Amino acid sequence: MIFIRALEQKILAEGKILPGEVLKVGSFLNQQIDTKLLKDMGDEIARLYEGNNVTKVLTIESSGIAIAYAAGLAMGLPVVFAKKHSSSNLSGNILTSQVYSYTHQQTYDIMVSGDYITSNDTVLIVDDFLAKGNALKGLIDIVNQAGAKLAGCAIAIEKGFQGGGDELRAKGVRVESLAIIDKMTDDSLEFRS
Image 1 (cartoon, rainbow, N blue to C red):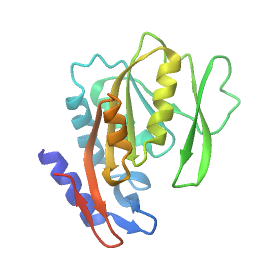
Image 2 (image 1 turned 180 degrees about the vertical axis):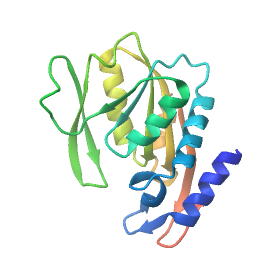
Image 3 (image 1 turned 45 degrees about the vertical axis):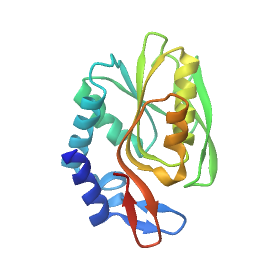
């Protein structure tokens, strides 16, 4: 709980609210990374999912990679990330799903090699933000295509007022968010208590 309060204070101190319900945290999470805070996030995610027999951490490029790395490092696990663009080094058994990004107003075909997520894995999905849940739904689809087990999802910042987390929880998916914003206006935000 102490870490969660520290993250909330960091969001209040350095986060910037932009039009369209966008919260910019580039000064510590997305573009410039506060490495101590990132380490603490990884440690907290590892604590939350301790004993769940997780074998892989899965995220989506690019902003989710840092926090997924921190979680993977804390758990001693490999990190796999879904690519948003096709590349020549992806071939063979490719797991794909479509994800609509509200931030970029675009649909992506996300891809992971089937060599990296298999039916022997228990997967923890980690991402920086959760709003409507589209990225998580796409990643869950990839886990299901692989025949792997889903341990749950760990999120740095959830926009609770956009409903994605609650929708996934209602479907039985374990979602652990380190900070949940329940209300956000053009000049203020309120965390879930």
